[in-house]
Amino acid sequence: MYIFIGGLTFFTGVLKRKKIIIASILLLSIISSIRYNVGGDYSSYKWIFETIQSGKIVDIEKGYFILNRIVPNYPLILFILTFFSLYIIFFSLKTLFPKYENFLFSIYIYLYYLQWNLGTIRQGVSISIFISSIIFLQKRKYFKYCLVIFGACLFHKTSIILLPLFLLPFFSWDVLLAIFLVLILLKNIIVTTIFNIITNLNMSYVSYLSGNIKDSLLPEKIGVVFVGRIIMYLIFLILLKKFKYRFNPKDKVFLKLLNKLFLCMLFFNIFFKDFGVAMRMIKYFEVLCLLSMIWVILKIFRNISLIKVSFLFLSLIYFFYYIKISDTYYPYENIFSEHIYESKEIKIHPFKYKKIKDRLNKSGYNQNEIDAVLRQMNVKN
Image 1 (cartoon, rainbow, N blue to C red):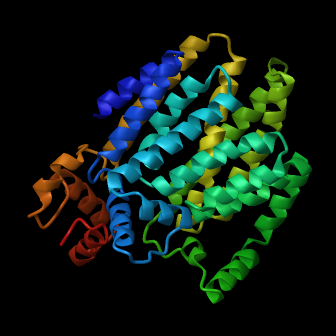
Image 2 (image 1 turned 180 degrees about the vertical axis):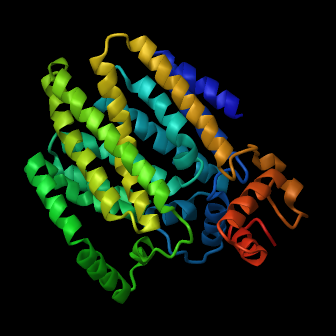
């Protein structure tokens, strides 16, 4: 199945045809909808659906809750969310990067489809909505931007950090940098104050600052990723300074905004680096900044075909590498094989179970803790 996705995505990026995009979105949505125990949060989302369908209340974002209440079965939920997310991504890319949308959509699939459409699907929807909101931010339609961000919050509450971005056009890059430096210096006071507020008010955001997710992100990994983001930003600044004449006035307006979004990404990376789950907030910026960076390279250099093929091959390699290192993507199984696990104690493929167990063992979990994690994933009796 993943070979099929890889091939389909490659041709989608090479061929400039609307029909192949529509076919790709439909097929990728179907693949997402009929999967079984594929993606780290598959079982959690299935439990949420079954619990809501039974008439019980689940502490989840209202938009996602309502969707689970009105849609009759779980595969259809997955199809709707994937189709909506991918369509919004493509529409946004077409608006922001005309003539490059097919190619950038393929890059998105290789780099993020597994994580945000087969894994953490609620935030995947929010990320797609955020990318679409940039259209309004670029045009300085601040009210519409805020409405769209509130829509993203209906699927993932971390989107709330994106709301103040409507202020970006009012600040120069230098002023923004100065504000971020002051906030970083006052980080401990600010975080402690926020933590006390959300704790006293019993708000559900506390897990994002409490750091109570065991080994959620190791410091050395954060360091490597952060260095990579800095390098990407520096390359962006160098290319922008040297080849600014290659961009038209409309592009320059977007590049000015993008420069500030890069700065926001690095700021949040520093500010939240000690709070495991909170680091996921940076992904909103990372997806857009990375796709934008590739667009900048395509706009600057002349041999576009060679660059496109090179990026597609590199992204394809990453796609299969991500499958290899992750716990629950390989092998791909569909809902028609679900009956095989009905009478088994462990309701996931043995290979997936071994990878999950090995990862937890390396993190210091004992067998009882491993069993508890599996029960929490709803794959163990």
